[in-house]
Length: 281
Image (cartoon, rainbow, N blue to C red; front, side, top):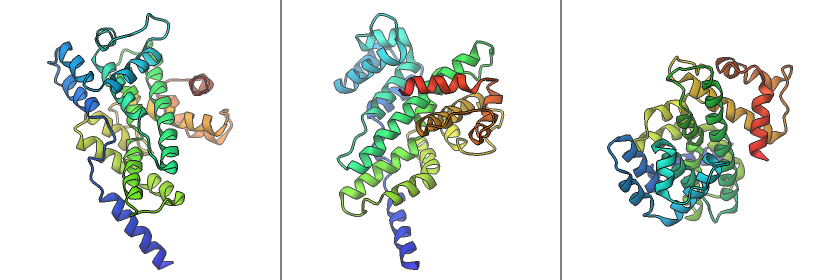
């Protein structure tokens, strides 16, 4: 038993000592975020930056027409996307396209990556939608649907970082493909590593703060509570949908979302559940 625990600790130390610059984001997405945060960019500069990688640009246009542009004339150029959608949504598109294309030749890791993307994208869309819904009745400056979308994407960034790090170690033969080890490490260390990654890449503090509060029972602190509640609620309900758990006010699962529903002033949990189910089908 002692030997087994020692082996696990050694593997954990190997994993957590991996470089923080493991490529979890596309470089263009990060540079675009930094450019937009400067508030002094010109459209031509943003277009040139995005078009440095034609594959990323194509993926961004694909998501622009599915996530932001339903029922309107198609967005066919990056310039058209920037003009129509605005800077924050362009950043969101870049991160969406970046994270959607994380793949591995390792079948175990690749399955995890696909499931992670499926979940994070659903949480991003639902979080943004929730903020828009409550925004109709609340003029609080705390409400920003585009920030909620990116927070939804990034809430799993620690898991993505750990998977990418494991992938490197598996490929080099330093770790073995043990499913129980993968699941255990992701569960125990994803929040800490997510904060570490976001801070390393100088992504605005609002997103590391959201990650830090994601599974904290004392998540309400009076700052960005709506955003955190939206991401927490979206995450939980998407997990329930994937597990086939139907929410009713008498079931145990409902108790896990009551605080978020209350803060967001949502009286009908099925309203949210059905939306998540619709985008997940």
